[in-house]
Structures are given as C-alpha cells and as structure tokens.
Length: 130
Image (cartoon, rainbow, N blue to C red; front, side):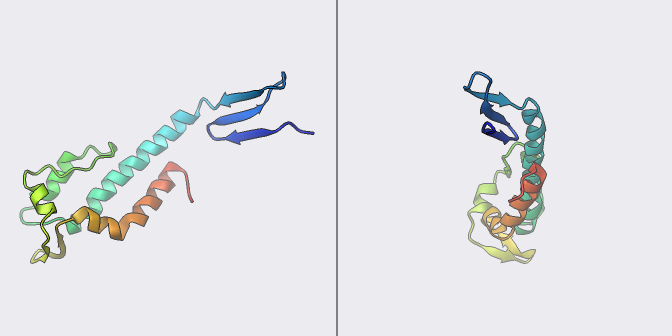
C-alpha cells in the first residue's frame, strides 16, 4: 500500500519515515508565481485604463491623462487624479457630442461590458485557467 501524498504547486504533504505527516514547501513557488501575479495585476490596471477611455468624459482629454498619471501600473489602484474627476464621475449625464458612451460612472459601465475579458486575461497571465 502506498502512503498518501498530496502535491500542489506550493509544496507537498506526505507521511515521513517516522510515520508522521510532513509538510515540504516548494522553494521556487513564490518566485515563479509572484512574477505571474504581478504581471496579471499590471495587465488588469492597464486594461482598466485602456477600456475606460471610451467611457470617460472628454473635453480636453485631461481627465483621461490624469488617470494615466495617477495610476502606478501593477499597484492594483487605478485613480483619476484631476481635481474635477469626482464631480465628473458622479454626474448622471451619459452621452455627449464627444461620444455616446462618455459620461459619469465610466468605470462601472466599462466593467459591466468588459469584466469577463479582463478576468480571463489576468487568469491566463497568472497561469490559472478555469
């Protein structure tokens, strides 16, 4: 009879020579997966900015550029830092002469359309599909 063994990417659990359970960590796990997760986070941040652009109010494009300037790609925080960004975000107007999609709540409206695409891309980059 073989002794039970559980193997995962992070390590293994098995019965040692003394009959007690032993936990052995994979020393390469953090190095490999941390890089994948960081790349996936950078993908999410950049996709949020890119896909939000058609929904963001546009007059001089300063609001869009403030999102690029206010975001450290890979940090997990996307922020539009223009002083008027909050007022523009919570303004209920949708659709102007600069585009039918542009208006308030641009992130929420973008997310409603592109959420699955962003999640699937991040999973692929992180190495986990499903």
